[in-house]
Length: 478
Image (cartoon, helix red, strand yellow):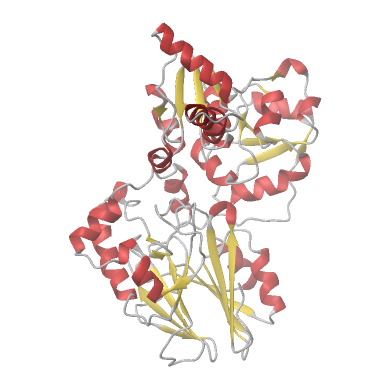
């Protein structure tokens, strides 16, 4: 999204795999610009600024992010830009803090800072006016304070001495302050649907204050106590990496060099690294992984929400060696770096099949029809000889249901709850479409469990077992 001609340059960047929105705001009359909430790999911001004849002079963070490692240090190194947070932020590097109500002029374009604590204590929003003094702002960059259809979750600091209720009360006041902006003010948040920073985010990437006033459940006319109750209820489990990344975003950590290639490893060097304790991360699709992979490898398909899944099942401190398509190694390294997982030692420089067969294994994925027969057999015999494990989130299972007898254990909680799983019988893992189940099953096998997963996930079960049964009950034949 880019603004039309005029003094204001406004560009939204959207990273689907992390549901992350960032922004470049500039003034054509002066060539001055800021970037708000950047991702860690910053090449796109630099190219866009050059395209519009702009100089990036400041990086503004709306808060200390937990779901991705922000690119403020990378942009500062590449451009000399100042880094700014709200004045309540506590950081380990020098910044140019921004006060509540402070106005920053880029030329004709003006930015106004609003302190909006609630998602985090230091959260701010940035009001953008094409001309200083405009009665109706162009828009407001709301960070994780206000999403389209939701508000930021207030519970992420509950383990660091700030309760979810305390933060929710701050969030109530902050969101009501945003509602004093004119209805035509555009809302531009830091995340869209799929982000774990809220529970009801829309797929829309912008809206207006007026539409949010009318359609956002959290902005409905309610008391502060009612708001606290509704926004703290039903929040999904936060991925384990959030705690790591939020700390890392406070630190003066090393910057990412996007142009450094991932060292290619021969099969022999790859096996030595694995023997030395490195985690084997196989980025191929689940079918290719099932056909042949290294013993103990973790399968996280590179498509989709790769980094987020990695953050749920890997430890940021673990050394990682990649295998899969050698041409995608740099992309995989960059996507891991976006959440601060920087210990990629190298990547197998050949196809997995080039590894000595003694180090490879395969696993049979389960088809929906076969699983239905196995479940029916369990019911007849009256004793389960395997355990169904559903790794979808509570919202998914509540909306869609699950398989008979399935045990619910959301993927973000898997590693912390391994001790709850039986070791005397196999596990059959299910998810929505078959990606997360392959991830979970590979993690379980790497830790000594006997585990397989359902090919195609709950969608396949519903399409191949439930719907045919419904048609048969209705007297409909294929």
